[in-house]
Length: 312
Ligand SMILES: NC(=O)c1ccc[n+]([C@@H]2O[C@H](COP(=O)([O-])OP(=O)(O)OC[C@H]3O[C@@H](n4cnc5c(N)ncnc54)[C@H](O)[C@@H]3O)[C@@H](O)[C@H]2O)c1
Image (cartoon, rainbow, N blue to C red; front, side, top):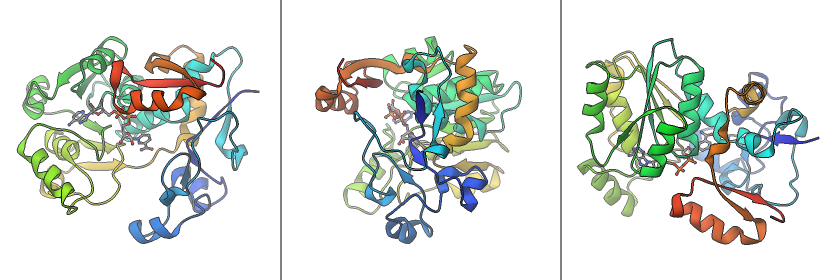
């Protein structure tokens, strides 16, 4: 049997898992002290993440031990190639949840910041959930081209245009109905606020760069939804609370509850309604992992996702 395993670990039995909020699980983080202090309550364990989230080793390995496998492993339907289902463990449910949190209505316009693996999956998911138009924002030409050609988005290069003005123009002056942040705390930017964040980060007065978060809150139409899937770790500055409050925005966010979504995503893949395999730009052997990780990290050679095979 082949299985897909979600990247965030749920126990399946606690209050949170029982309400399908698996990433908030009470029981799978064996080192809860850190997030208990920092966030008020500890959250779930995550593979290949930091010690604050349990210190579990990553899953790029020949064998992986899966805690609570009955909750976290999902059988892959016969006949689907590995490469079509491998992203159902993380990027796909993350992008899908980002779109799901937007309560998309038929005809909606959705803006997606970030055309990495998560952003690409958010674009596909927004269309699946009924969006009429999706506008994707990034600066890498190959990622923007992928968003346009493979996911069907209209595209904006944030280094070439004023994103807020462009979105206003493209939506007849109203703004997108929903905005999805698929970038998070390591955002880049061009404006004065970006320079401000860089300086504050350098002197440790701020941990995260909320460039995209600010932009999404300001660009979103009145009464719209901002969905945050990009990870933030600590504290942000100049958060436009006034805009969010006075425009009546709904803010939704969180680590992905993949166990809630994976069965329906595998079904979409089986029916040919979704094919995330275009994210694979590189293949490597586990033995060449270091070089592949460097290529991925530096986004060299158009790298989006590397798939490892033990003896490829
Ligand atoms: N919520 C979850 O459970 C969950 C799960 C997986 C990943 N994530 C997070 O989702 C985010 C995206 O992941 P990824 O794998 O796609 O990352 P990635 O680094 O491949 O993609 C991020 C993209 O954002 C773009 N970007 C940077 N600044 C931007 C800006 N100002 N405007 C528009 N685009 C900008 C970058 O050019 C890049 O292409 C990360 O923060 C990651 O940690 C969250």
